[in-house]
Image (cartoon, rainbow, N blue to C red; front, side):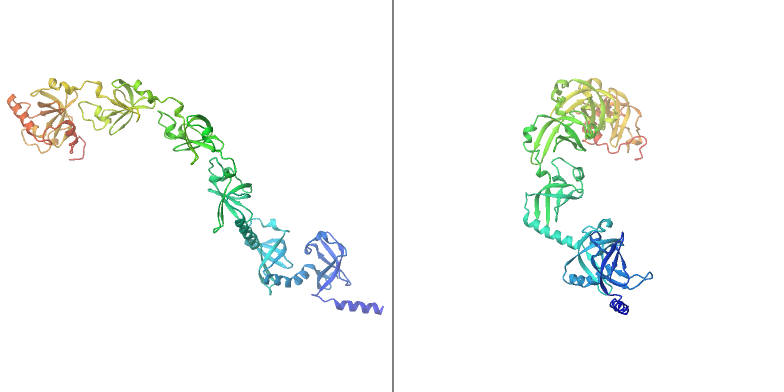
Length: 559
C-alpha cells in the first residue's frame, strides 16, 4: 500500500501545468473526446480542436497541453489546439523566413476577413482571399487552402495570411506559359468572366482575353449579353497577342462558318430577298435576310413618291419584308436593299402623264420664298416659281396670293425627270396682257386706281386688268414732294394720266399732277419721263420693286 501511494505521488510530480503531454483517446462522444493522460482523472477536449474528426479512433495517441490538473469537477483541463499552436509556432516562423507556403483550414468569419487554423490561429483579410474580394465569405469556412504568411508578431502571436498572392503568382506563371506557347489563329476554351458595353472578358486560365462585341457574331448585336452569359464556357480564336502589355484579342465568330462567303451567289444583285427588320435608325432599316447577314434599306429606298422622314414611320421591329438587292460590299460586310424597286417608278412615265403645256390641278402643299409646291398626286409635286404666278404683278412671296390647301390650276412648263422635278406656271393659263398693252392703255388716257405700294422714288397704282403703273415722285404734284408717304397712302384712290407705255420693259408711267393737263402738256411730261436716268425714272416693275428701300404701309413704325 505504501508503495502504491509512493508511485502515485511520483506520477503526479511528473505532470506540470503548462506542459505538453501525451494521451490516448479513451472515448468518442458526439461533440467531444475523453482523453486519458495517465493521470488520476481524464480530460475532455472539444471535437472542434481536431482537424479530421472522422479519422479519430479510440486508442489514438494525441499530444495535448495540460492547462490545469484539476477543475471544479475534479477533471484535468486539456487542449489539443493549444498544444499544436505551441509546437507549430517554430514551424510558422521558419515558413515565414523562407517565404514558403503553409496549409490551413478556414474556421470562421470575422470582421474584415477569416480566421484560419495553420497550426496556430491566423487572420486572413478579405482583400487577400482572392484577386477580386468575394462578397460572401461563408463559402470558404471549413475549406482547406494553401496560404502565404505575410506578417507575424511573435510577442502577440499574431499571424496574417494571404491567399491572393499565391493565386496571382499562379496566374502570372500561367500567363507567361500562355504567352510563350499560344499563337495567333490557335483555338482555346475559356470562361466568360465579365460583360461590358464594348465586349466580353474571357478567362483563359491565367490570363484574360478581350472578345470585342464585333467579333462575337457574324450577325450584328448591340450588346454582348445578347449572345453570352457570365460563366459560360466558349471556344474562341486568338486574333492578336500583345506580349509587352500581356493583352490577348479573341474572336468567337472566326471559329464559325462565315456566312459572307459566296454571298454574291446566294444573294445576286437584282434578286428578291425576304427578311425580318432587326433595327430601325433615322437613316434606314436593318433587315436580317439570313442568320449572320443583314442588309440596310436606306430611308430613300423605301418609296418612289412618299415623303418618309424616318423608317419607323412605315416599318416596325420584327416585321417581315420583301426587298431587292441593290449592292454588295463583301469587304465591309454590307448589303444595300431597296423596297421601292419592287414597284414601277412613277417618274419613268411622268412625261406621258404630265405633258408640257398641259393644264393640271393640284393643292398647295408648301410655300417657300422662291415658290409654291403643288401636290399633283400622292408623292408627285410640281413647283410654281414666284415669277410664274402673275404676268403683271411683282410677287415677293407666294403667300401674297396663295395659302396652304388652296386648290389651283396651272400649266406644265418643264419636266426634269432625272431630278424628279416638274415646273408649273399659273400665269401661263392666261394670255400675256402685255402683248396688247397699247390697245388697253394709251398715252394721255385718264385712269383711276388705288395705291398698292409706296417707295422712296414713287408709288405703285393698281390699274384695271391687274396691271401696276408707277407714279414717279416728280409726277405726284406741282409742288415739291420730299417724301411720297407725306402725300399718298396705301389704299388711296387716285386719278392719273398715262404718260408712258413700254411693252418691252413692261412698264406704265403715270402722272397725278397731269390729270388736268392738255395734250401738249402731257406730251412734254412724257418727253421728260423719257429723259430721266435709270433709277430716277419710271423703271421696269421688277427693278422698281427691288429698289423699294423705304416701303411704307399703314401701321408701320418706320417714318
